[in-house]
Length: 213
Image (cartoon, rainbow, N blue to C red; front, side, top):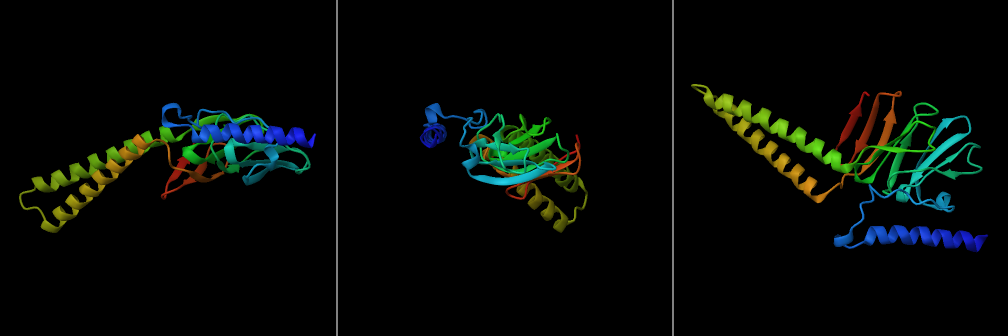
C-alpha cells in the first residue's frame, strides 16, 4: 500500500511538473487544467484551512488541491477543483457556501460544503477589469485637464498638477495593458466573506476586490 501511494504521488507531481515546465509552444494554462485527483493530496503543501461547521474543515494548497474533513481532521477527501494553480486562502461564511482564492487571479466558489468548486473569476478577466478601470480614470483626468486648459486664465499650478495626474494615469493604463499582454500574473492572497453575498479578496500590489452579489 505504501509503494502504491508513492507511485500515485510521483505520478501526480510529475504530471504537474510537466504542465508547469511545458514550452511556450505547448504551454498549459493551469487556470484551465483541473486539479489532479490523488490519494496523496492530503500530503501536499497546504496554505490555509477553515472550519465550516462543527468538525467540518476545508484546506487549500498547491496545484489546486482542496481537501475536506467531516471528522475534525481524522480523515480527508479531495474535492473537485477546475484549476491547478496554487490556492492561498479559503473562507466559508456558511456551512455550505465557500470561496477560495489563489495565484493567477483565481477565485472559485462552492455551494455544497466544499465537495465541488466552480470558477467565478480568473486572471484573464481580472486583467480586463483593471484595464477598463484605468481607461475610465484616464478619460476622467483628461476631461479635467482639458477643462482647465479651456479657462480664460487657468491657474498655472492647477494646470501643472492636472497634467502630472494625466501622465500618471496614462502610465498606469500602459502598465495595465502590459500586464494583460503578459497574462494572468496577479496572485490573490486572502479572502473573507461577511455573509453569502458580501465578500473581500486581498491581492498583491495593493489590490482589493469587493463583491456584493
